[in-house]
Image (cartoon, rainbow, N blue to C red; front, side, top):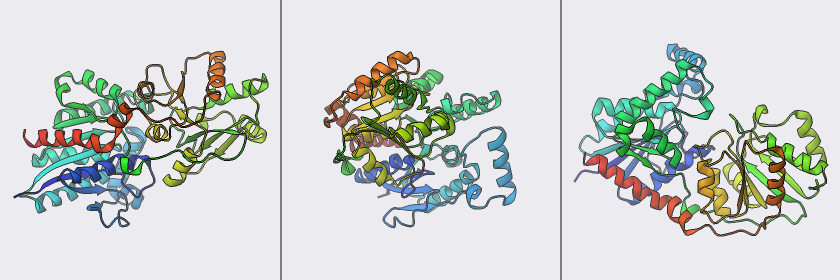
Length: 408
């Protein structure tokens, strides 16, 4: 009897310290419990995980700077057409690794599963599926077209993203979006493909559940944001509101402290003069280096309240939201109106307040005062949260897509 394999193409994978590793690892873990064998092609160094069936394909753009014409071509593409991490050279090497795997498992049933970003994962999977006829499931952790991070780029870049999106969606046997808004956006752009555009949210591993930690024995209420601030995730309006509230006597600088833990672009913070004054007064703490995931989680677990900064996108949901909700303490979300984040928080069972980018300053001030009055005693997430975002249950939905792809 032939084996049933999932060939998982994921540029990011543990033990790499980036948030994008969690989703592919959860799928790898739980798909095996559904009877599938899994093999990973990744750019991450997986030598520390000998129990994982994985092959590292190093990214030549990072490993061999300046070497060969391919490096210079990718550099030009990044500079003039598609900025950011692409993995176009890596895609070619990943494709070749995939071809070797398929030759070695010629008698088995195989599904290709790729998770984007970066672009190289879908490029490798598309080429591999196209050249072999093996079914392909394309997983979008971020939108390719309509992504606020790339919205200000030129018309040629936008045209390239639209072409790639159309190619991927039409070629894949199944497509997965990770928010309701992202799913609807894909369906509206590709109505003839709507039946195969599915929703599997990000989520949490029930075997690695986070619990609230012990709060520090001090009178200061900690409001923590754990993660990077970049590409429109501007926390400035919230900090400026807190400074106003202190100046007007509605908040005391000894009453609270905002902790921003992780790298932050200058455009996502107020001026250096502002942040220095706030740090001097003791109500702002900026820790600008990347912390190991376990340490970042401990910081969140030991905070009275937690902060989400996502004003630039109504579609995306930061993965940290699912960690915050497990912890159960109040959440302050700076997000657009009717965003996927807000729709997720509403039935979650966890106290929260939303501040919108178009709120006038006075209303922002009132909302922040109201938020700091919330009880920091942890709440239990709702049954809806447990059922919808549990990775074990989500993998059941993914397994159904795998079976549908295999029987087409």
